[in-house]
Length: 466
Image (cartoon, rainbow, N blue to C red; front, side):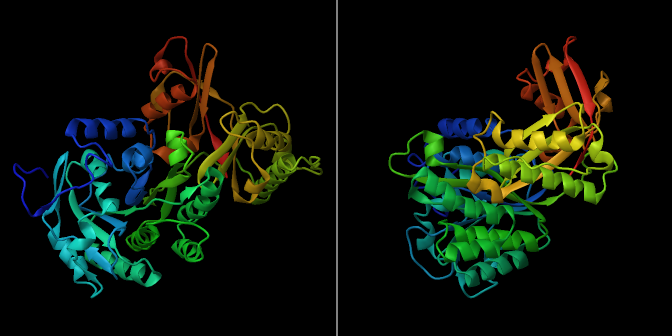
């Protein structure tokens, strides 16, 4: 990846020193700090990312969520796709220079792959004017240099972003990349210079489409101006291509605005999104406690109706004629998500009353009383998904080799500190048993190795999750 001397065939990076630090030391330190602030993993084979492209002081902390995903993964090629901001043209341009120079060194372009993509369609070409000043692609490269040991890069700029162009480029990528382990990156910011409330309203429409892996929904919303993304075309293209190349799932990793990052809301804010597209690894979460589909649906109905009544400040519904396992005492957690992001989670570890009552109470508490979040608003109700975890009684363990990722959740008690993580959390983030113990300690506000302390008590439990 590194070269001893610069060449005129390597593209300079004109935004180094302005949009991001211009010296190797400063740049490396800044990106490393951003990455160190992210604790996130995905269990699966990653094939696509969405990452923002503003100046690093604004969007760098969000981009780090995307690039953290690929620190432990290797790829034959990385293809970065950005929109054209400075030069108007029809179609798509693929850079065929030898590579790019940043303060972190030089990066080789895979010119053979670039030419193979160009050969797929007459509307794909190399136009140097599309690349000479374009920041949307350049901004991604230093992050890649930090997280990838070997980097064989292709840079693409989209001049038009209609569905025909997105489909054409997606087909070309699938054809040229078939049989390779390729990472596709869509470079895009979201809404520009609205108030925080308006930005969130607009950007949530994009987050929803990305989280549902629905590129047609995203295109329709962008076409009707119900949301904004300067790189909407690159996002749609990456969604289409990664699906064709085998990805099965998408996840919104982080959303923020320039206001939430910097605290400056005076000139309006810009929205930033990090997301990932991946092929999920099969993993069994929790255990089967014998609840019927009817009982599960009853519990979900109880949770939703109770939340809606509480949020709308109406009288709580009464649930009568409960039967079977709904009358048994179980611990239960109710987890609320909005567009793939945690919105509240409260639970009762020990069952000391009928399950349906505990489920009702914990659902209300998750919506209104989780201290990490503001109470759920009426306008959020339709966007909430509800996950219910029915717990087995905790069992104290001293032999940590008996922890099994998937079936087991963990509790740690030490002094006045207590932390609990449900079984699905370790699966979602791809933790080992040791990492699961460390993260449970963090949840309790304890040092990572606190579970080894003689006065620490560690318990495992399982749950049926639906």
